[in-house]
Image (cartoon, rainbow, N blue to C red):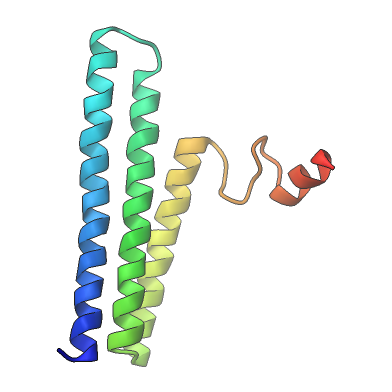
Length: 124
């Protein structure tokens, strides 16, 4: 087996792991939410959204990793790197949007809406 074939196979495996993360996360989120919904517990929808959002984020990260591996290792042409840059840009925007939806703050903000540097300086 050639190096490019191995890398392509690795990329496909990581792609599959990304899709599996989303699918398994969606199924688990639903399975965890249904009993709580049947008991009429509060916050079921919020918990479902957070679990599903985290699953989608994990899946997106794995899909980006697979794209990077395949593009850089298999076909590092200027055109393919440009397409990769566009894919990473779109998926990064999606990840940030999901993070904002899940936590209510941007990834670079601290726990209370402050930057990590500001939050760290308060603890000293």
